[in-house]
Length: 295
Ligand SMILES: Cc1cc2nc3c(=O)[nH]c(=O)nc-3n(C[C@H](O)[C@H](O)[C@H](O)COP(=O)(O)O)c2cc1C
Image 1: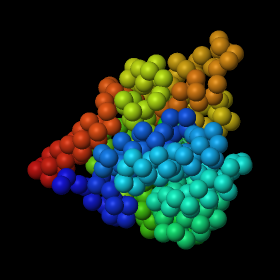
Image 2 (image 1 turned 135 degrees about the horizontal axis):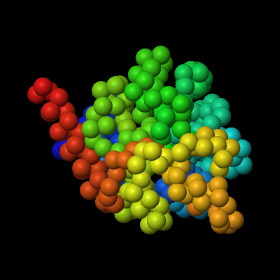
Image 3 (image 1 turned 90 degrees about the horizontal axis):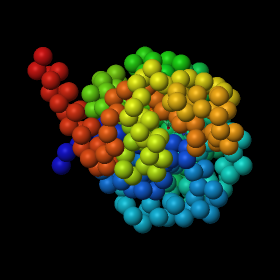
Image 4 (image 1 turned 30 degrees about the vertical axis):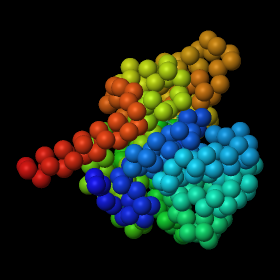
């Protein structure tokens, strides 16, 4: 059986060190099931469901459709549903929880109590040390150029730096769209590649077809880091940010109509199924490995 083994894949029982990253208003059960069946692990923000009851239904649906592990992203700050959604993760023993913003101590305690893993989003060593002290099992290193709220440090520095300074497993987030890049991140010490934008342009993703096309059309220079939409630095596709800034359509909604993506857009030019994409990423990874070992 084809597999790429890292401490992360061993711990979660998955075949490939590829994470389909949580994306607000995009990640859904179809994507998590397809990721799991393809040998990776998918993560969904609990807030993608409009109520805790709908979130619990989604968790049950995923468990019914696949035996593969999956993850849930919990936002810690200003999230009135945190307690309820955490209780649902506990009740259904969600294998992997990723926290964003805020202090993860309570989540870590609750998830460890049933044997789950907690990884925490960080953009620098200060954050990383804090979540390590709180008992995190690993870090999501969000680098410069990532889709969503990006960090300020290049991935090829952030990943080895955080790994060396904390000793925790590090998932590399930001601009990864090909198997060669996954190989490069593993060579830098990452335990897995944490990929968002690449998976927006898949058949299973529910993103607007115009959003997917905009990703295919974009170059890395079309990704603009701006605090104007959410109040924090976030990467957006220039055409949709321009529409927002011009106020050409007063009804534009953040995230839904202003499209976030990372610099990896420059390496994305099709909309495959998740299964086809993962097989391609693995083939590219293996080719890159053999090319380097021949040189
Ligand atoms: C549209 C979009 C929405 C996102 N929403 C979330 C979110 O709700 N929670 C979160 O932790 N990260 C979120 N992210 C960040 C991703 O989980 C991941 O770190 C990022 O997409 C990796 O960079 P890449 O898109 O360049 O691959 C989002 C990213 C995108 C593109």
